[in-house]
Length: 467
Picture 1 (cartoon, one colour):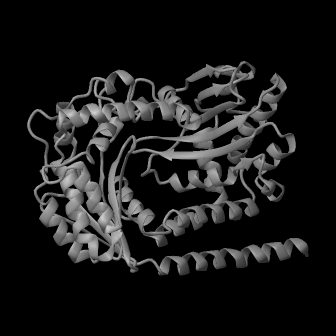
Picture 2: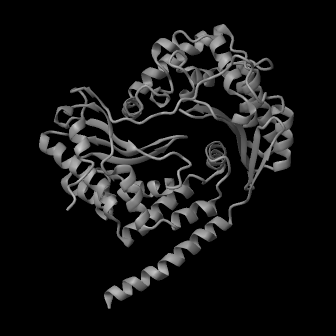
Picture 3: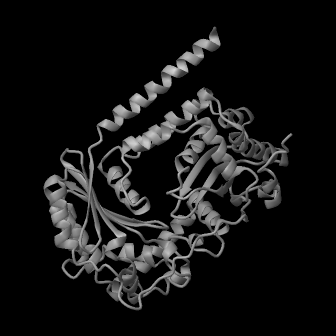
């Protein structure tokens, strides 16, 4: 009788979950997308309110550099706020401050973004300001020299952020000799040698209209934003000038490891990763669900006693890690799926117990997942997806990123439906494809790394002897 009751509850719960997802998706306003004559895309989502976020998402980052120019994309981001043909640095700062707005930028391995958050009435000024920064920055030699020192200090700060360093090292060994192995900031020798001409050439090569998206969300009107884009970005060239070519090599995953032994550090910090999936892979949401199914562990959190994820339960039982955070990172042609860990390893037994839990639980997904765990994982994934779109800035971010990666805006209804449609068989199939008997990459910094097995030992942990 109890089994029949649970079965009936599941049958009711599934339609209820789908109905909830549909209700949430129904409140999302439509995304309007237009392509200008120069092939630059303009996308808006009017969510009302008194503020708006708008920015330019550009399909370029450190992977599109060469070894000799690695770091120039990030250097350019810094230089873009140091004066244009119309405004000096002080005027830029005062104009943004007088609007009561926020202007910022960031560079990743595959994208560069410039965005502003302003009041509704300042949307026209913000579009003009963004175009001036992107298209008319002067890159004076004096400003380049000043910013060079700022970036060198930033590099020192990043070196103290252990998680950032571990993931940079992970990319270096996961994609040896290919574009994604490069760091975003670049090596010190490049920062010391980049010139204003290098920066200007990078802009001419990569800042072309088909690789740019003007995305806006909040208190915006599509026709107004499109008119503003035509006025201020209509002159962006469709193709780069002759002689401004660039190479776009594939990033190939390989199994390798790197370890930085630092016995003065209080713990070991490491990332263990399989090759994941690219953004456009049909199974990408299933792999994101695998990440949710693994769960997040924090030894100091009192919530661990209420955890239900098998990996988290095992970690809480044996207390062999301080923190464990699964990750699923996607790129245009590849991805990384794995766990980031901070642990105090006092003996070989600590290492053996910890890695058996981590690798066994990832492999356990290849054997199937219960209905209860599947429902829990879906709820967590949908919560995370919804949280990423909570506000005008996250919404604009999603619009810009999706148009660059998917070539279209994937609305909330479709996103949640894809999650709802994932079955236990899908989880098993995708986990098997990604994790079972596959190469791994490993990067570690910290103390007592001597207890961690070599790359061959880690590789042996990717399969069991099946009977």
